[in-house]
Image (cartoon, rainbow, N blue to C red; front, side, top):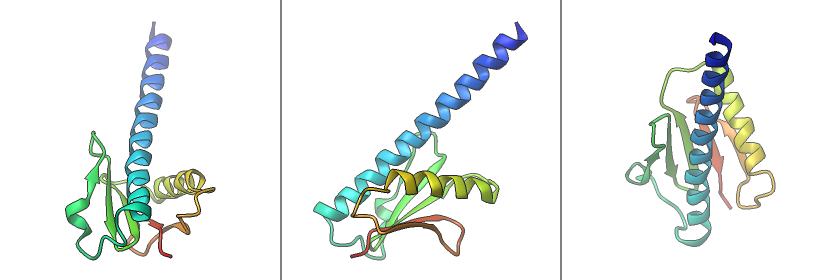
Amino acid sequence: MRKYLALLMTVFLFVSCSQSKRELYEITDSFVESLDTEFESYGIQGEKYSKKTTEGKYRVMPFGRLINVKIMEVVEDGTYEELRDGLTNHYEDDNRVNKVYINQGGTIMIDCRN
């Protein structure tokens, strides 16, 4: 019974993380798309456009033609590196995104500058 419960918990956590990242990618995709179709730039007041994932784990905020992704809980550096790698893979073939990197403040930036 304990093995079954442990397996069930593991699957639940995996699915939850996948849903969270899926939602994060949907939000970042909407900002990337809007910079291609709707906005030339979000300017310096991107805070008013910021969005959080449903469970509040990630906050996404545009700034000019950059998109900032912040994990809203205390995590180790490796977590940001994994997130950067995941976003880099997600935008690998998207010519609207120049680069995905960890900035000096420790958050992820998606660079959509021309």
